Image 1 (cartoon, rainbow, N blue to C red):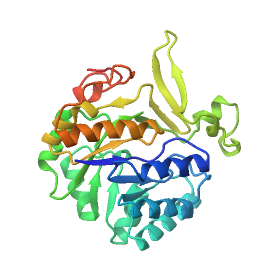
Image 2 (cartoon, one colour):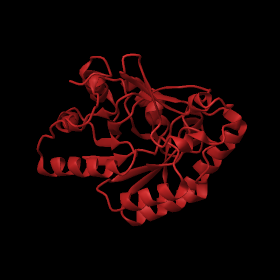
Image 3 (cartoon, rainbow, N blue to C red):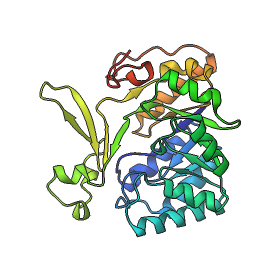
Amino acid sequence: MELTLGPIPYFWEKQTVIDFYAQVAESPFDTVVLGETVCSKRRQLNRRDWLEIAQVLRQHGKQVLMATLALIEAESELGALRALCQEASELGILVEANDYAAVHLLSSAGLPFAGGASLNLYNANSLKVLRDMGLVRWQPPLEASRDQIASILEGQPEGLCTDLMVWGFMTLAYSARCYTARVHGVAKDECGFVCLQHPQGLKAASQDGTELFTLNGIQTQSGRPLDLRGIWQEARAIGVSSLRLTADGPAALDRVRELKRAIDGDIPLGPNTRLNTCNGYWHRIAGMASA
């Protein structure tokens, strides 16, 4: 099975990002998704910086995808999207569309593209429509169960790569407002880049201390990270072709090495009881639960 590293969901200093991907270049990941998906104000790295990182990773044998914003609200963001799609195409880099504006731009230009989880593809008919438009790989919705995904894969078009997220905080919702700015009492357009103070997001708990959510700019994420690495054999059996881990820090490299050893040895991967994780959606129970 292919191993994919998703984009960094949080706002990190530029050198931290560069150092992280230098380690990724030596990791077992087959595919790496780069770019900013949350907020266009996060400009520690510009488009040229991301493309330079992409070239380094490709020299190390990685397939690289460039991700787009999941919520496009301004003409300036559309302009940046057009430029990204054009430059990535010129370099032969696949774009992962996280918004239907990106789908439209890429399909209109006759370019193949990947589809992120925020496209909300819930059935095989949707996949067939987007396949005709140029879709070559996709992510199932994060709240989909094993049975739902298996049903979709039974009817999906030939040749699609299915990229299942198996590690990381799940994005449950997007908002035009920035939660992080609001917590700090500043306006979204005058935020002072307060996200830099929260490189793993802001935790939100209930009154009894239950970890409910992680706030990350315009994203509401799960309070606990998803961990589905232990079902990799089951995922392979229903037709999943790629397992995706979130780029949430250096620990992601340890987690993928552990998963790679299990896959290479064709052995089960037991749960890590030291981690406070969840996997309920896969098992058709409450998403924040762990089965």
